[in-house]
Amino acid sequence: MKKLSLFVGMIVCTISIQAQWKPVGDKIKTQWAEQINPDKVLPEYPRPLIERNEWLNLNGLWEYAIVPRGRVEPAAFDGKILVPFAVESSLSGVQKEVGEASELWYKRDFTVPAQWKNRQVILHFGAVDWEADVFVNDILIGSHQGGYSPFSFNITPFLTGKTKHKLAVRVWDPIDGGDQPHGKQVKDPKGIWYTSVTGIWQTVWLEPVAENHITAVKPVADIDNGLLAVTVFTSGRNNDIIEVKLLDKGQVIAAAKGLWGKELRLQVETPSLWSPDHPYLYYMRISLISEGKTIDEVKSYTAFRKISVGRDANGRMRMQLNNKNLFHYGTLDQGWWPDGLYTAPTDEALVFDIRKTKEWGFNMIRKHVKVEPARWYYHCDKEGIMVWQDMPSGGNSPQWQMHQFFDGKEAVRAPESECDFRREWKEIIDLLHPNPCVVVWVPFNEAWGQFKSVEIAEWTKHYDPSRLVNPASGGNHYLEAGDILDIHHYPNPKITLTNPQKVNVLGEYGGIGLAVEGHLWQTDKNWGYIQFKNPQEVTDEYVKYAEQLKETIRHGYSAAVYTQTTDVEGEVNGLMTYDRKKIKINETDVRKANQSVISEGSN
Image (cartoon, rainbow, N blue to C red; front, side):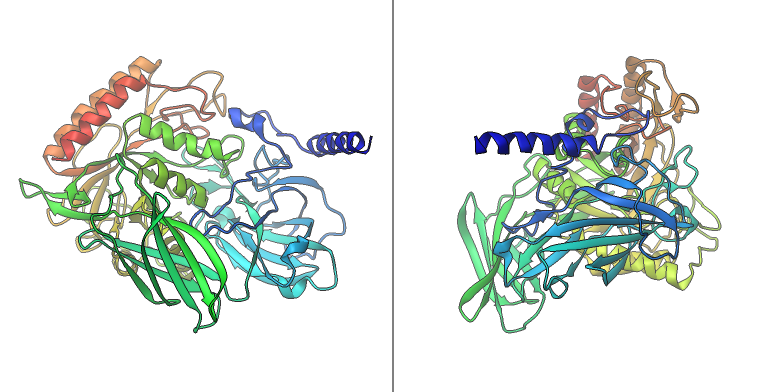
């Protein structure tokens, strides 16, 4: 009888939770929106590159309030919000604007598991846009600025004397009213500019650790010498020992020990190399040892792959993977969702776009002025697709020169704006450095807030010499900056400028539009660079452009990016609709064309 009562109670509790939340608004939604359980939102471990067995997911229903900026925590909250979906999104259950004159408050209670006693408790935020103040038991414990990088706090000192604890977060986001990195978010969305995203938009979670614990793992593979260099960072003492074990199919094949922060070298004879055709991953077990006792252990993974440049038989600069010419061919992927905006509804949804891109015969994705959750890059690593990673844009430039080398005046950012850019760009590189899928850094796009281009490109290359730097996708171009000259040309592929000392690429082209009734974000003002009436017309035009692209390859192009993976709000030039329910091309014909292009460009 007690079991029956407990079961009935669980059903009533579940129904009650679901009754407090539902998607709102009348916009289109993905199929995954229907699969969301507000009691188990994005339950997957959020950080696959440093994985521990114990953790506590804090996603779910929180209280929220929108109040004028500069106020203290409100006495009364407005209702419930489903974390980690931004307050402007349908899946948040709120769908309200905040704006730069207001701030967004979150609040919830949590209980630390009893088995975590005598351990340090770390509070993690995957991403909060843009400025966050975090309170535990009404104590301001820390702040963070930056909408795309993770941050964490040791909250152990603030958990004394209670079993249930209060967590509150205050968020302010100037959106496009400030010069901070914000990508394509604007207060007045239209055209290529989209709905603003404010607040928590990635997983919030707790994790128990030792007082001294592993905080970062940085592997760098050297395929030419069969070496893997691994640097591990910790939170504290210098005399604790790091042990790294490299596993292949569950068997330890190499190991090394040393102090934290020191480069440990592991020899691997004839390693299996990672590529889009063979996304081979090695797993790592990393231990922190103090006085002969393991006090922390994490699981991670890595791959052996090399990204470089070299000349082909005709003397043209080509991109190379593992010392072989490889044409990079991918889609411009903006990472937006009609129901979750910046946040995919489920992990299945997150991987769907990646798998579709590979099914269409592409080998690369350009992640456009956005950074994804860590699991997105994990899926790219596993599925085998290369990533060009943009820095989210912010600010404006005096002028934009697309098809000539820049001879004008660059933007001059305010000191705090420049500091915001540099800090967050470094945090993004630190976050993604271990992911083998990331092969190119793109600090600027189409002169949006572009400043000190040569200096930023040189710093990026110095900070991570293992990848290529595309300093200015679509302009403004400098002869001496970076590894790549990147031209944009719509709608058809065309060479308008080259640099024989660099890799020449077509960073954007295409934009073939098709509005599919019943799958549109809005009823009017839908647009593509060119418009067609049915999937066959779109496919024919796509294949025609693929043939033109082959001609540009013969004259020097080493990569191309097609616009775009999906429709986004009023843009209808995706290969599939914004809700991911309709494919707008003949997939077989597109795959065949793409494979032919990659083959042509990889000689």
